Length: 110
Image 1 (cartoon, rainbow, N blue to C red):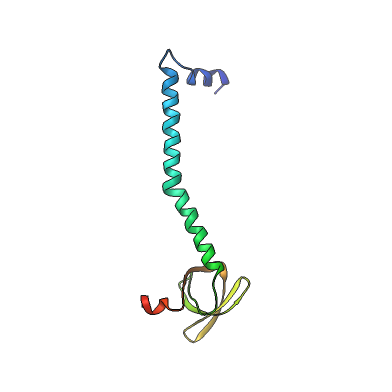
Image 2: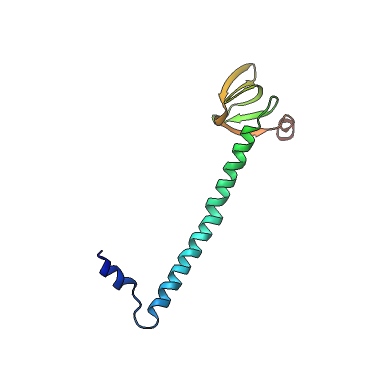
């Protein structure tokens, strides 16, 4: 569209045309605010809490990997964790941890 056509599209038609545009913009702003506070902000906060929990993993914590492996952390080194699951020891990247549980959480849930 040309700038003249856009001007005619949003130009006030008489006395109530400008008011209709301002109400429309107010409604769109309210819609965007609702979407932000109901969908976007909670997801960002959840991701922030998850990253904090992953950064605080220590020896003895029980973790669940993204692949579903449950194990106890036996060694922490930078971005890799050594976990014991059953009779096996696995090395897992820290960012592949889906859930972190404390050392006593296994008895509570299982």
